[in-house]
Image (cartoon, rainbow, N blue to C red; front, side, top):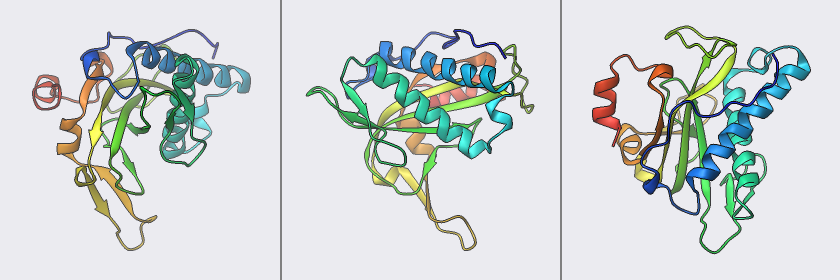
Length: 205
């Protein structure tokens, strides 16, 4: 796949809800940089990254690339915390605050290992064809973001699971937690949600 410039396919919304030093410009540039790096990897390898790694790892990599892109576009407001360290974006300016980035595939709610209060940037994506076409319930090789949310979550906004035989304790953002996060970006053409109007009514504030 030839590396190319691509970015968010729909306009950002509710940008006044962004805070903690994160701006619409940083977010847009950060996402575009993440896409550019993924496309460059695909082009260099001659095969799509999504075909080489498990989807959980792809989600983690996408989050790391978004964080790297935001840092590069932040003008020094943020630095990277480093792999597997909380939070992903570390404030490096007086007006900024630490931000955790969570990524999930399709309609899955973002999760982590611990419930920790703080500012969160939650990104959900789908897998499209090489040309950027998305068919619901089908998965192509190229990640495209369909939803971005931002806001402050408390410990109570996570559901804790520690099922025997599972990979360990997980903390999943609850439905109420997702409602608390403001919808910053939504691409209806990429949405895995069947009833878009109901989704926006319930979660599109």
